[in-house]
Each structure stands twice: as C-alpha cells, then as structure tokens.
Length: 486
Picture (tube, rainbow, N blue to C red):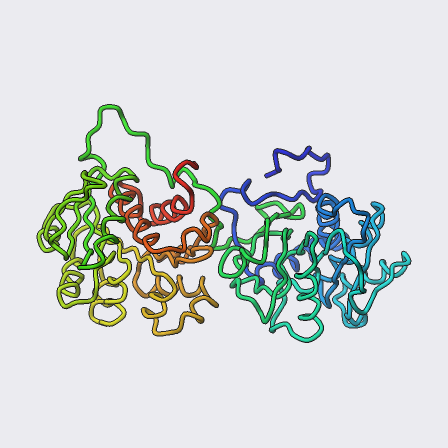
C-alpha cells in the first residue's frame, strides 16, 4: 500500500516508506521471521541487495528530517547488518550533498558479508570512520544504526555512552529498523535504549516496536517492505491493530428496531467504597450501544445512578438468574466470601462472560475457580493489567512486562479465553494462537476507572452480537480513542 501523499514511482520495487496509520492489520514479524525472510530473499535474488534498498529508503527519509542548519548528519554504525544499512545511508546522503560524520567501532574483518561490502564501498569513496562521537555544537540529524533485531544482550560500555550522548542532543533522531537497545520481539529495553523521533523499520513490523517500552523509544513509526510482495512473506499469528476492520464494526441499525435487539448486559461488582467502578462500566456499556444494562452492586444502598438514570439495578444474586446476553463481573467486586460465591455462580452463566479486576484476583487465589473458568462452554474474556496477570500466573510484574506477548498467549491458552493484557500496546490474545497489538491509546488512560470503562465497552459489543475475538479487539481499539474520533 502506497502513502497517498507521496507520488507513485515508476519502479514498483523502489523503497517507499509507509506511515503506520495507512496500514490495516499489518502482520507482525519476530526477529527469527525477519532473518528467514532475508535468507530466502538472498537465495532467490543473489544479485539484489536488500541492504541497498534499506539504505536508499532511509536516506530519502533522512533527507526530509535533517534540519536546514547546515550542520552535519551524525551516523552511528554498529557491528552487524544494521551498521551496514547505516553506511549505505551515509553514502547516499553524501551524494545528496549532506556532510556526514560516521562513528563506528566495528571490526571490518568481522562484519557480515553485506555489511562488509557497505563498509568497503564507503571507504573506497573516501568516506572516513570516526572511533568516537566528535565534540560538536550540534547536528542536523542523528541516524541510529548501532543495533537492530539481532541484539542478544544488554548494552553497556561505550555503546551505552553513545546512546546517552545522542539522547541528550537537541536534534531529530532517526532509528534504522529498531531503536538500538530495544528488543524487537518484546519491547523491553536491554540495558539502555535510544529514544528516536522517527523509526524506519524494514520488511515488516516487529511486535517490540508497539508494546512495553517500544512506543516511548520509536517515535513516529514508518514501514518499508523493500519491495517484497506480501505473498512472499511468511504467515504469522500476530497483527498490529491500526484501525478497525469490517469485522470490528456492528451492522447499521434498522430504523425499525428496539432495545431488545441490542443485548441485555449484566455487570456485577460495586462493593462498598467501590461502587464507582461498576457505574463506570455500566455507563460505558450504554454509551457503546447496549440495549439495556443492569448492575448488580454488592453495596445495595445504591439503587439509582443520577448521572445515568437509564441504568437498572438488581441484587447480584437475582441478576445471575436473569436472561442476559452477556455478563461482566469484577469492577469494584472486592474479595469477600460473597464476592467469591458470586464469581462461582457467574462461571456457570449460560452466556459470554467478561472477567476483570477482583474477579481475576479471586481466580488467582482459587485453583478450583480457575479450572472452572477454563472449562466453560461459552466464551470467556479476561482483561488483566500486568499486576493481575502476574497474580494469575504466579510471577512478577517485571516478568509480565518483559514478555507481554508470551504472557497474553499463555493466559489465553490456560483459560481457553480471549485475553487483553492492558498497558502500552495492549496485547490481545486468542485461544487459537492469534494475537494483536493495539496502537491506539496513550498515557491519558493511566488513571482509575479506565479498565472499568473497557469492561463495559467489551460487554456492550458482545451483547450486540459481535464475535468474542472481534469484540475484544474492537473495544480495546475504541477505548484508546476520544469519543469524537472514528
């Protein structure tokens, strides 16, 4: 897919960076996938260098990013193919008339073949290579080609010092493929990481660019497939949730319709002091189009929501016996004996079930309840934050955040459930092994009540007949957008 704001080039295989927002559900590739793509391409096209294509694409983008101050472009070239890409960029920029400082401590005798050729070509053209970042009043642009998807260790020493120096510079920073220090598969920082203003990634999107620390390191993300057709790329289980597909949208309502056609949502929670969580979930369900919503609050003093009087109230035990299109339990539930009994009863409800907050904590503390959840015949959807996921799996928050995709898939398999592991780049995992990483949202969601709102939105879409996997993806994506956005 070409960027509509760019002219069409006569060569269909010419590099063409694409903004993330222009893509629909692009596949996600792990580092092992990328290496396999590169090997397959090299075997089938020995005379065509992907490194040259990557360097050309990066040089074009760099030319638009460099300020017009007349200052040099600083290029950091590492010991692998990422460094080779950077050297190709250096040559291209010099050809465009830019002054370039290339900094590298790589041993040319130990470079991979393509990178070694790029090194030799740069030196043959008279290019110099500096052993350290020179003292300078400033640069017009920094290009990060230290480490790409092949990074297998934490960064330290001189490389860490360079990254710290670059992060402190007041100029645009362009990372090639992956910001140095960011794990391409998980999004965790390996010791330290460069914080780019732009990242141009090659061949396909990597999950680590979109979740955990990825969004804070990447800046604006651009993709260049380097002219490889989608049919020549391997199938993968992951996608980036960049916008809603048709499966994420409910059909247009007929004028001749009534509330009974759009689901009766039940929400159980709201113990004393935490009723607000249940109210937030209920209001969100109505706003998302549920035909009717009944709250079963444990604090039975609450019988009306004056801010949203359309909400109905019932004793939680009575609500469990009602005819519901979907049941959500957890917002403000607490972990009392009564809450435990309500969850046990909810697990046998003959409708889709959304589990959040204290419902997840109760599952974590009772293996019998957890086993019962995994045996349900109706769909189960879990929406844990990292702390809840850690309790469910008996591990630490740090481990959850370091392996977000694996965690979501593990939970999905264990509970035979659709799982949204919340956080930066929410990971949505499905029992069939598919997963998606959401690209909407931001730090404004880091406040009390955000998760309750998501619970209500998911329940509303389920109640209106959307498939469980699609409802969870759609709700997560919509949750990240202000109501005025599409």
